[in-house]
Length: 330
Ligand code: ADP
Ligand code: MG
Image (cartoon, rainbow, N blue to C red; front, side):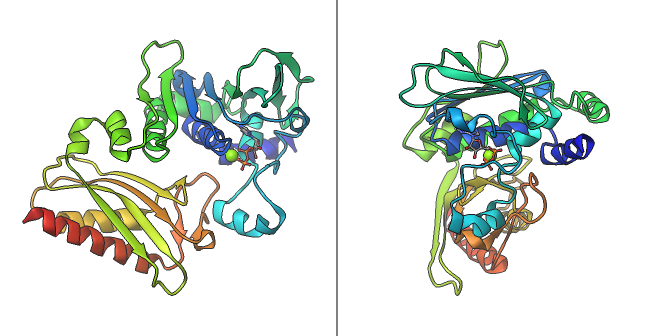
């Protein structure tokens, strides 16, 4: 059974960066206003995510890392949520089958926190009282220690750290009221350091630099006439002055970081059709849709989504971008 669990877990957590993404999403879900990430050896040796969120109650610690433990479903929402967000309560559990997980947490009003380690879905020891300030720290050590081939592949390929930095950068652009930092463990300097702000452009400037922000235009779509409900989009896209060899597409749908390849391709197409130079776009986009219209159908950690009415949505966004680009180009 343990081998089966390990293989399943290795599917949910495919690389260090997928673990980081899950941990940071948990911190945001916990209402954190500060999320700090530290990583050793591209995440293979250590991933540490600390937040100042609401913490985990003592009585929830024993089952925290059992599969399908989640505090995020209420009875009636179950089916809908499972369908739209996929695979609830799998992330932490999975990490315990392929790494050593230690959680330190304190909830509001407590005098001290608790620390507890997990292996293969269960607590290794009773939670030990410890000093803690606010929120939760999850440490994942020796990821894939029991998956020799995976570890080897990851060690031989490029370090996952740039991917981790990339995830945190994207979160920082979307969750502008949260302080993010990401560093190599022990390093003084953070590679992402984004102070909370009330302005999206400030957040983008923090992370991607002033030269990007200078060349951005705001775009907005609110489409209430769609047959099957409302969808809204707001974001920024680069103008004719922007120069880059690669597309940067930061896409959040209903506040979840996702990929939508067909939308990305459509935007690249409009962009190259209208703008004369060969630059690829920078795009930040936040789309909101009825939850049941989003299908994370492919795989728990594949970020690729498909949308109900996808063609209509893509057409509408394309039109809005086309209009913006035309106006800016004259
Ligand atoms: P999910 O996020 O889908 O519920 P996870 O396996 O990622 O599943 O997390 C399981 C549960 O652990 C969450 O539902 C939440 O109650 C709790 N949890 C995990 N991380 C944190 C955190 N940083 N702060 C507070 N609670 C957390
Ligand atoms: Mg989660």
